[in-house]
Amino acid sequence: MGSGQSGDGATGDARLADLLGRMPTPEPPPLDSLVPATVRQRERRAVNVDRAREVYKRDIHTYRARVYGGGGSYEIYDWLRLCDAAGHRCLRCRSEEKLTVDHVVPLEEGGSNCIENLQPLCAACNRWKGRESFDFRPLIQFIELLEWRPL
Image 1 (cartoon, rainbow, N blue to C red):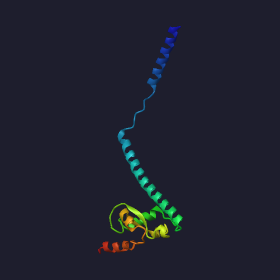
Image 2: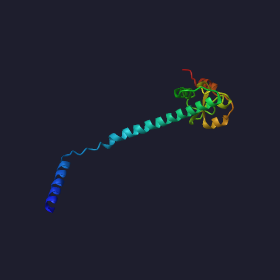
Image 3: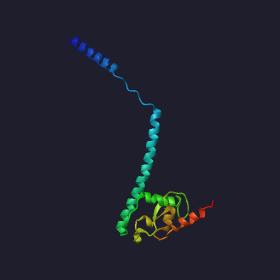
Image 4: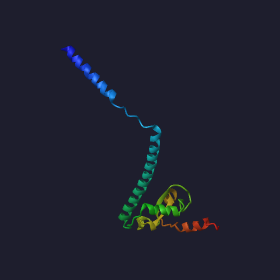
């Protein structure tokens, strides 16, 4: 009886080995085809993280404006157009550091969160300004005049 069981086990093992031998083994994809997709994914993720951060800041400003009674909101593309108009530089010191949203009339003083009340300042200038109402936006037109060169 022991010999019959071992014979059945041997044929079962042989059958399994035969089946496994017939199965095609998948070829792994070449490594160079995976690298560009990974790089694209990282770049896309970085852009999405920056956009998510800007949306989060906008939502916080909208909430604070509602709490202080100023109201209003802005779209991210409006903020980016304002930064383009300023040449992606701080309006006060003209540095190329990361720009922050500054409210000309602070939310605590009844200012709105509309794009008409925003100006791009670096973090240091935004802290310097504090809760005062300084409007550096007329500098955009002045700087454009200074940078204008006749043909």
